[in-house]
Image (cartoon, rainbow, N blue to C red; front, side):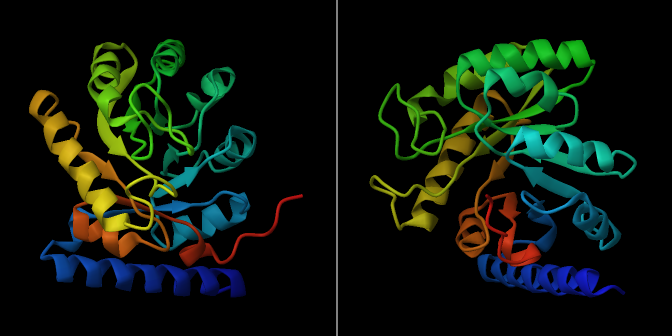
Length: 239
């Protein structure tokens, strides 16, 4: 085993232990939580090693980096998640490789994704990104729609060809009433998810929690956690 593969194996093992412990503490089955490894700033060679180690869900947040990386790994059975703020001029590229777009937060993006999905003859899974720091009608500091905009966006996704409504996503807010209260934030997202499933039963994905707060996300009921640093190591500085 190469040194890098050994490093990744150790990181994965530690994260796996954390998720398993958090599930046990919450009275949940380990298989209820899916690990998504966020590979931004790391090379395609790391993605290949992660695949060898059993990882099947990977995430990226910048199309400029994600598109060539996904292309270089197109022979692998991976599920690619796009988790960054998405500009409409990047949608056509993202629709070529992403299986799930976790950052849907405005109607214009829904229509662009739908057109791109139809053009690519692919069905794109979509998560509504919820900003718990946003006032009504506004977007969050880190992207996302205010909670009162969830239903409108969800309905638009559900009605759009080429798209599939998978659920909700959030990033723990740095400001507002949930700042520093990750578990409370994630519990609120799970409440929104329960309401959403009343009208959209299949939209049962709840993506929350990262390296620093995955335990809080699991305790709250998240179905997917997005972990980068804890698996891959501290990110190299860009620029």
